Amino acid sequence: MIRRPPRSTLFPYTTLFRSELTLTTFFPRWFIEDEREIEEWFEVEMPGADTKPLFDRAGQLGVGFCLGYAELSTDDDGIKHRYNTQILVEKDGSVVGKYRKVHVPGHETNEPDRPFQHAERYYFEPGPDGFDVWDAFGGTLGMAICNDRRWPETYRVMGLKGVELILIGYNTPLHYEPDPQQNALAGFHNHLVMQSGAYQNGTFVVGVAKGGIEEGIDSLAQSAIYAPSGQIVAQCITTGDEIAVATLDLDFCGYYKNTLFDFDRYRQPQHYGIIAQQHGGQE
Ligand code: CDT
Image (cartoon, rainbow, N blue to C red; front, side, top):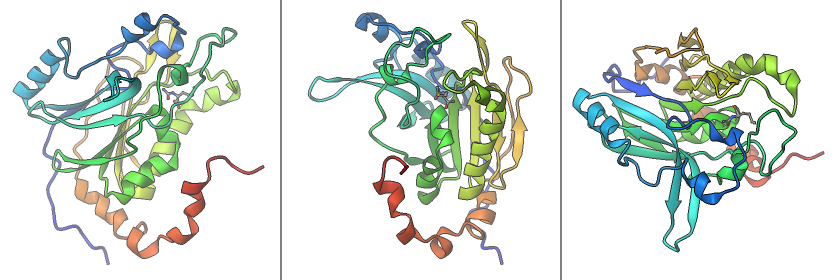
């Protein structure tokens, strides 16, 4: 017997979701040494002077949105931190959630033999806040950024917090220099991880690409909306500007959260300790 959650509302809001590092080019493809030049890519406040009109307009229209950008923050000790960040903005224009990318891929130093850099680990430190969820748009929403989507822990942490919709921006170059045999599988891996993350946690997932060619580099498109069944609800079919539209009944999550993936009933966390305690894999 399926236990339905008490709430039975449709997801009655319009939201727009943009990709990772939306406000700039994907600058980690360049290795820049000058600190001041680096900081030009970063936002020190959000909204700032350039982005305030977007918030105002969204508020006027009652359209929420999610936006990825490079964040420069200064802590209480005056130390600067650079994060790959995404925010969730409600339909009144208020920021309800901020997420800083946890899994930072790529390399730390200049590797001039590559056709282009992927120096995210030079520009960004891992987000210190982990994976949170927020009550927004009538549901429980979470966020992740690009490489996070490849790690099952990303979804499970939010799954344990009751997430119903995870918003993931990504920027995935179609050429992967460390192992080019993976190039042809980029689209397959993209769907594979988000479909399984959605299914195994009974949540909707929205994956949004900054796809197509930017500064001569071709990146994966295929933005899509995934259901808790693991099925694709909607998908973009071009590499140009395109909008995928779907109406999501978040109560559908209950069919999975309360049956096969009833965590309370079936999980065996006493056997999972190594996942949180051990960093690398054994030989
Ligand atoms: N932006 C981002 O995280 N991109 C990575 C590319 C592969 S690692 C160089 C990704 O996981 O899609």
